[in-house]
Each structure stands twice: as structure tokens, then as C-alpha cells.
Length: 636
Image (cartoon, rainbow, N blue to C red):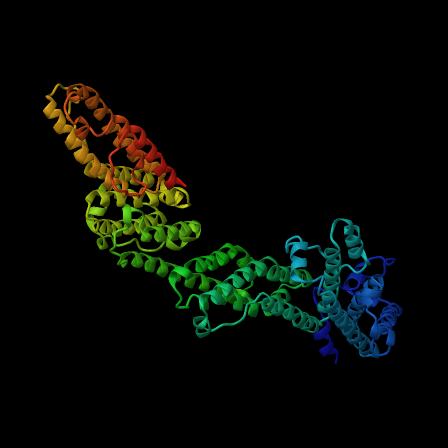
């Protein structure tokens, strides 16, 4: 029996009894301490422990069976723990002396009763303080690094509670009672572990705390799903599930797992092994379930367009919490949680890359052939740029995902769409290159759609409108930082080139109808021919261009100003010079149909997409009035 008790009780880390304070620490007493330890003191320790322990024995005392020691009298609770610690030291000494009398049996029986009492107290504190020991209260109370240390020196009775009470004015009621409960749990745990009853303590803790984690996961709406279940859901139901999961990750990382790790680290601070074992068993199952959900959700066959941004949200949720995941689940036994989170990140990343490829394919496969009336922005442009600007909001996340993605194969597009080889000397970052490529694919498709216009000037206007819209979406979103100012400047130059080509084709004959030297002297007959040629070309150009639409106000004004700058001064000079020559001819109003003011009043009607039956101005006043009415109607 002595050998067996030695294996149970002996703990090399437990300090041995010191000799009486009044004794002198002679060489003999240091080498053989048991000889200086009086039999009466041993008896006194056991009797004191017996008195305290039996008082709180629930099997022999009705009072003890219905009353909580730690709730009823915290100072006596600390004395109880001290008695247990003294009893444990006495048992160590008895074992070292090889004692075979009844004192060891009595001490062991007292220890068992004490451990049952403490196990009961441990359970009661965990159960009755659930509201104060919920993960949110704990996580907001402190961090693992700054969790208040409970007393482990039982001579300093009540010091932990005194410290907590002193701080009571500066913390909330919940934090106050949370601190008290955590201090009590730690005191009990340290006592039971030191006495060799760690298993009994840990089992109680695991049962109660695991139920809290499991309940928390369930209340957050996280439940196991199969791929078949996911595929049967419509998008609205699936979207709600993903939103619920995103909230669950945020809450669980901020409170649920964080709070549990803080509590576990605090209660079992005396043993790294027990801390790891407890937290791992309590949290591992719920965490694996939580971080395994994305792997199932990405397997759904729902539309890529609908799913892309939710997948990006899920990737963001894990990646932004990765430091916390590694910190909270840092134990070797919780490495499976880290692995699950990492696997989900990989699956989400692969899914995002697949959906980006699908998006590119959807642009290339667009089969719409009907020209957009007035050369306006194509629906494909609207959809694609809205999609890309939303993707731009995930720039930092996509940058990580795209960084190792092979660059696009340029052979899939005609060489004419690429810049000179010199522009490839300094490759753009993968993120910028990928977005620039997707817009290039769109521009190539739009170039094909432009060929469906019968009037070539409308084709160029269509390209100018769409590229201007693309640039405006870039400039008003995160795409401006992804693509950069150089990209914007280069494509703005292309817009000006498209607008110039439109102007040249639509108004070239009007410009050419006027002489290079409008102030030169010519015959009345020749002047009349020029007026007639100008009338017909101007009316034809105006009719076509009035049916066109330029949605961007800045581009619309720039195009009208450019036309007016080339047309109005020349016509005004020609008109003022030649009207003197033709003034006396018969039916002069038949070929001099427009005064310079009429031209100025007609040009503002351009590019509003409101082609009307052409009518010559009866006077500059009526022309100006009708022009003003049309513009007012369009702008309203």
C-alpha cells in the first residue's frame, strides 16, 4: 500500500513541508526533515483538515448538500483549499516516511471527500454562472495575455476577491461576476490537479463547456449540409445560408472561440497539457463544422454571376481572421481546425478563379447582333463593367488569389488589339494585368458589334460611347487603383480618336462643302452652288447625328464644341462675305437657308437621340425656340 500511495501522492513539484518557524535550520534538519517534524503537528494538520472537510461533506451534512461553499463564504472556501493543500503535503511526508499506520488511510479518505466537494463546487460554479461565463462576456473582459491571475497561494486568503472587489467600480456587473467565477474555478482546478484529481475536474469542465460551444454554433445557424442539399436550394435560400455563415464566423471568432480559449487558458493555467486537451476537445468539432461549410457551398451548380461575390465574402471572412484562427487554434491537437480553414480557402480560391474564367468566356460567347439604337452603351458593357467594379471592391483579396494564376493567353485575341512589344518591357502586376485583360476582351467583342452599324460614323460613336462608359466606371471605383492612371490616359486618348473618326465621317462633307478661303471673291452663281451644297450636306449630317446618343455629358459637349469650332466660324465668314454678292438675286432664300445663328442653334440638338422630321428654319428666332424646347424636353 505504501508503494501505491507513493505513486498517487508524490509530486516532485510540490514543495515539502518546512520545519517549524522557531526551529533553527541545522544541517541535520535539512538532510532529514521528517525527524524534526513532530507527531503532534502531523496530527494537528489532519485534525484541522478533517474538521473543515467533514463540515462540507454533502453525505453527512444536510447543510453541506444544499449549500455552496464558494457562494456562502469565500474566505472559508479559501481556508478549505488551504486545508486540502496542507493535507496533501502531509500525505507526501507520510509516504516519504514509509508510514504504515492509520493516518495515511484517514488522510486518503479525507482527500477523496474533499475532492468530491470541490468537484461539486466546480460543477456548480460552471453551471450557475453560465450567464457570466459566456464567451462574449469573457472575451470582452480580457485577452488571454492579460487575463487576471487568480491566487494560487492559499496563505493569502481572499486576496483574489479583494482585488476584484477593488476593481468593481470600473467594470460592469457581468465582468465583475465573471472575474470572481474565473478566479474560483482556477483555484479549485489548481487544487484538484495538485492533489492528483485532474481527470475529475477536467471531465466536469469539458461536459459543460462543450455544450456551450455546441449550442453557440447551433444558435448561429451553422449545421452540417451535404452537396445534394445545397444543390436543391434556390439561390435565395442559399444566399441566406451564406449570410448566416458569414455572421457566424464573425461572432465565433470575436467571442465564441476567443472567449472559450481565454477561459480555458485561465482556469488551467497551471498545466499546458490540460489547457490544450480541454480546449481541443471542447472546440474542435464545432470549429471544423464551421470552417468546413464553404467547401460544401462552393460545390453548388448555381450561376457563377450570382455566386461569385458570396464566395469572395467567404474567402474574405476566413482570410481576415487567419491570424486569430492560428492564434486561437495554435495547439497541435487543433491543427485539424487550421487545416480545415486552409482547405476551405484553397477551395474558395479555386472556385473564384473558375468563375473569373467563366466570366471571360461569357463575354466572348455573347451572341447579340442587333445594333444598339443611336450608338448608345451596349448591355454587355453595362453588365460587364458593373461586375468588374464590384470585383474591384475585393481588390486586396483578389490580388492574393490571382498572384499565382498564369497570365492569359494572348493568342486568343487578334494581334491588332495589343500594344507594341515595347509596352511589355515592364509587366504589370498580375491583378492589374488580369483586369486589363478582361476589359480588353470586352473591347474586342464591342469592336465586333460595331461592325453591325450600316453607317460607319455610328460605329465609331458606338465605340466612343462604350469606351467612355468603361473609363468612367474605372475612375469612380477601385478599378482606378488596380489599372492605374496610365491605363486611363491611354484609353481616354482612344475615346478622342473614336470621336474624331466619327466627326470626320459624319461631318466631313459639310466641312468640305465650304471653301478653304471663305473670304475669297467668287461669282454669285458659284456662291449659290456652295450654299446649296452646304444646305444638303448639313441637313443630312444633322439628321443622322441627331438620332445618335452620347450618354456622357462631357463627351457630348466636347464633340459638339469640336464640330462648332470647325464649322461655325468658317460658315459665318463665308455667309457675311457672300450675302452681299447674292442679296439681289431672285429667290435668294431658296439657297441661302441658314444664317450663322441658325447653325449655332441647331448644333446643341446633337447627340440626344431624338431624330425629328427635318424642317428648315423660317427664321433664326423660330429655330432657336424649337431647339430650346427640344433640349428642355430631353433634359427633363
